[in-house]
Amino acid sequence: MRSRLWPARCLFVSCAAASAAHPRNGTSVVAPFRGLFRATTMDAMAIYLDHAATSPLRPEVLAAYTAALPLVGNPSSIHGHGQAARELLEQGRDRVSASLGADTAEVVLTGGGTEAVNLGIKGLYWQRAGRVAAEGGISRPRTRNRIIVPQAEHHATIDSVEWLAAHEGAVLDWIEVDELGRIRLDALEAALAVGGDDVALVTALWANNEVGTLQPVSEIVAAAARYGVPVHLDAIAAYGSVPIDFHASGAAALSVSAHKIGGPVGVGALLLARTATVEPLLHGGNQQRARSGTQDAAGASAFGVAAELATTNLAEHAARLAALRDRLVRGIQNTVPGATLRGDPDPAGRLPGNAHFTFMGCEGDSLLFLLDVAGFSVSTGSACQAGVPEASHVLLAMGLSEADARGALRFTLGPDTTADEIDALLAVLPGVVEQARAAGMAERQPTLGR
Image (cartoon, rainbow, N blue to C red):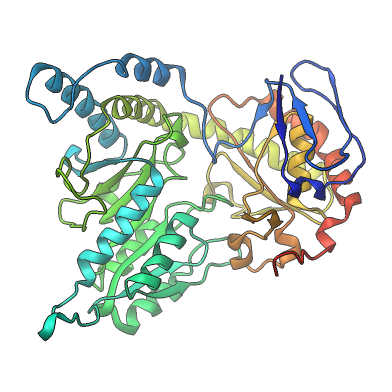
């Protein structure tokens, strides 16, 4: 058993009791919602349906990681210990590159997906924008300072480009997405046509991390290429779910993360084309092509194992996930009135393990808490600042009202998800939605902090 203290936002649920048969052991879970900061208990075997947030460490990955951690040696050292660490490091890098259709030399290992995104975006911007010194040591404005970015990107991208706008003179050109969360190619083309010569880069998702919509990657890269503009692709949500071929994509840079595919947290990679150059975020040692710092041999080894597991027999894995996703989607649509699938309704146009719904008249946090107590871990996919629930910027960019957007839940499946788990969720979800609607929180506009 484990207990947790819930923040004040969890008080948005009703004070009615949530009761459901636990899908793993058949016991009844009853948790009245009373009082501030109440500690709740939950079975340690809760069903995990939040793989887009992080995916459990695979046993093979854990074995490789724990075997590598005790090994001594800096991969940059030339003695025997160092070279043994170097061999382990490069084996991991080889596996990562093979899983993504890249050369080993194009894999820059990072401390996670967020660092990879920051290095890809900021590094390309600094390299492309330049700063020409004028007389008296005063710098002139950057010559290529526009960044083209869709409105529904992950916050790693949004926060990176907004930082560049605030501190480095970047001009942001926000591109609309359609009602499915897919970039509008006509808007992208128009932005490039305005003046491709002043565009530093285009950055875009391979697949939307919230609603699961696949993006037209080939068309994005081709449009930018016509104006000589490099593209950074955030493939973190797509990695291990759909085929990714870095060379075929034509992108200049591509970001991935280990913990989304059953690898360790704190390990990621930026794929950097041989023809591309970025300005490093970190300086001091030049251990990698665009990143300084002692390299993590154990992390690279574990990442490599996870990459190989996630992409071997990918088509079979994706088909199994898609079948489970479709089972979940049909079940929700058939049993929960007012539930609306968001993202591309065409199964071929979304990630195989993603089912994203909004529930009319519900508050997403209420739904999440009720499901958590019932033994299911899911996500709202929305931001929360200072305890105030806020609608997802992705859903708002797709044209949803704030009230509708706040009633969102994201279910993301993984390699160990079973049909029995999907059916167990479907058995409790209608009652959970009914309780959340009774709370009526979606009709109340939050005022704190506004």
